[in-house]
Amino acid sequence: MRPFISMVGMASARRDGVPAVLRGEVRLRVWVVVISGTLAAILLAYFGHRAYVETAAYSAHRNGTLALEPAEVVEINYFSGTGGYGGGNSQEVRFRLHSGGERTSLLKDRKAYLDVDEGQTVRVGMWHGHLVAVEDKYVRTPWTPGASMVFLPLPPAFVLMVLQVYRLWRLRKEGPKYVFGYNSSGAYATAAALLAFGTALVALSFDRVPWLSVLAFAVSALGPLAWFTLREIRERRTAPRG
Image (tube, rainbow, N blue to C red; front, top):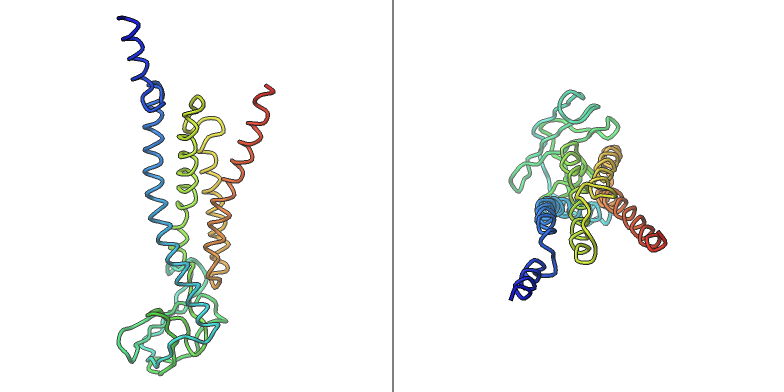
């Protein structure tokens, strides 16, 4: 009778193929996946939509398919680097559309400033309610300092989610590794955060390029994942020899 009870206990201890000693490990990793995955999904939805809008609006401007309408220049303001726009000087122009509503353009390069006066009527190019051009001059600024700051958590959250899902899958075949231990997810998430910071700075310097956010995400997130994959392949090839 006692051996039977022991067998039942062993079976329950390995319920779903996961030993009881690993359940705490599994729960921790699941929580990491849920938290990082939720954050990554929210930020991906935001930046995915923004990248689509900016790319589509830029393409419409290049193809000459913007909806043109007259607008009145209501107000013109200039800000120095201390005005909260991330350094340099900026020109902010507010327009009142003849079809109703107001839109604002923000240009940070003096050479790109609009040559307009308050009360002047100009022709603006619209794409689905977004102000894209003024007198055929492209005025979109997809990468603002605020957008860059929001972008920073996305690559590390995405990398952390992917690697923890991979670790959970490996738990069925090998012993556990600490969540932030040797060759851990934490090192790759840190690398992704540093790359995100660097690419965000570059994007601020080229904020007229609408698809730069996609390239920044690819470099920041896929770079550490590629690094992890190469290390895993190398370790698995050398493990049997050791």
